[in-house]
Amino acid sequence: AVVQIGAFSSNALADKGWNDAVAIAPGAAAGKGKKVEAVQVNGATLYRTQVTGFGSRAAASQFCDKLKAAGKQCFVK
Image (cartoon, rainbow, N blue to C red; front, side):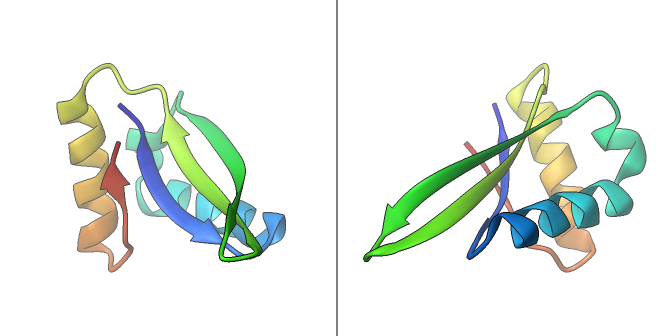
């Protein structure tokens, strides 16, 4: 399972989204990886940013719940 933390308009914003998520849940983010995937949506490039390395879907959900509690959006894939 991975947690998608956003789809951003630039690679720089994707990095900021990652840094924000790590700052919100530093313990839960320890040892996790970052995956940024460029995708085309309606003629624009978006950078999907995902947190990888969860041992289970439940662990990914717990991480996402911490982000949501801090006002961020995310979902488990």
